[in-house]
Amino acid sequence: MSKLKLTKIVTVLPYFLVVNNTNHNLRYMEENEAADLWYNLASNETSPFWPTTDSMKMYVKYQDSKVSSQHFNINNHHITTLRMDNGVS
Image (cartoon, helix red, strand yellow):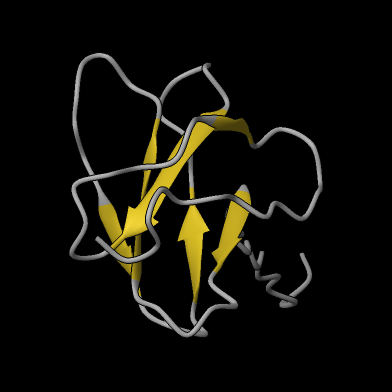
């Protein structure tokens, strides 16, 4: 028998990255009928995101706003520019 011992390294990477390239703090949420769970994302930050539903749609809003964007698809790589009603509410 060999005295060689092997180690397996497992790296877990996020399924998606949410990037805030704005000067505003944002909140984002996956489209989910069962939960209303918003995540905070500070200006110029990136956050890992693992979807919990099959909707593959997301909403975004300014941190202190009650108005959110329309939903948009997240299953394709793209850059999204969203119009937010009245800017910061």
